[in-house]
Length: 84
Image (cartoon, rainbow, N blue to C red):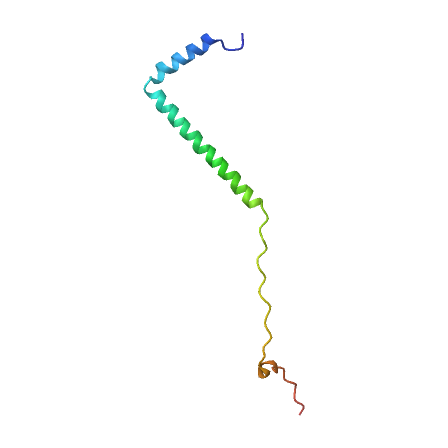
């Protein structure tokens, strides 16, 4: 008794057709299909974004080491204190 019989479904379908009209039902179904496709693509994109953010990011390249200078004047920058 709790389940709907085919007659119940037929009555529900008839009421829907009477309320909304046979012209508007295909448009409503088309709009629902578009909405579901958009929703599905957005969910997929969110999952792709989550997968990208969960992937380990490569470490940035370290700065190159300073190269020693070959100029003798530039190497002798340390001065000793003078005694008076």
